[in-house]
Length: 319
Image (cartoon, rainbow, N blue to C red; front, side, top):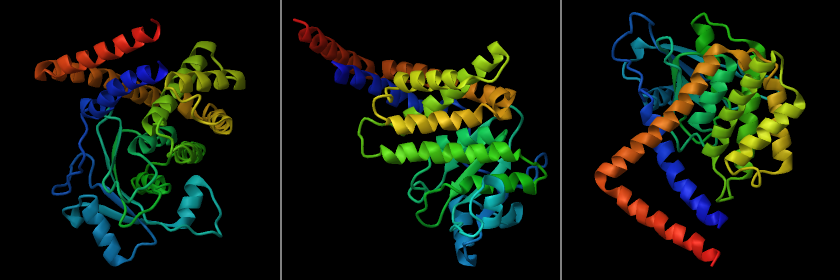
């Protein structure tokens, strides 16, 4: 019976996820044909490991049409250590690059991976969630790479772009944001061979955990305790049918991450709350849109037939 119910849930969730992105008014491109007189030039940040021809290629991959209309800056391994921590004596391959532009207040954070085949591990949702944690506000971020990379260091480019435009982000929040990327990615990679695991579900759970912890802090006027963090994490994982999929060690790592998160300004940031709320609304709006379109096209009748068959199957289990 659980498999039947999970199949029912998966159909609705799949449709919701597809439409949730379209429900939010975001562009997948940054216009570099003209200069935005309000915000100025977008900033292109490329990894120091790229040679000149690779830099040119990466520019094309992220959609830069006129190089004169972007500010181009290099990000180094030393800056990676400065922004997110790490071993200064163990240089990384700085390959993944970003194109960043400022948006109007209230627009939120939008991340688009322009080379999904070459960013092999981190999802756009994971980037966006971590950007929020770091204090990035109202920006569109395009991520690209000329060859396959994990994508874990792309956040460094985002921070460099903001610094290049005179915006200094909190170092503690930047380090915790990287910890978020590392923790969520480790759990995702550890379960990628499990067909019942969904990286989107994990990201939704992380979003909900942040919201629930913020509500606890607001109501109690204090930082959530370890026991409260554990309860919120476990309940959220259970809601998204992940509690029996991820391991105890992975749950503990997620709890350990949120112990750090609740001690940053991100916990009670109004900008973070607003963005998380919009993401939740987008999922609901997407589900409504999906239903309306299905009804108009006649697909709804077929879905209804499927659920009727599922219902009869469930009833049959008890007869």
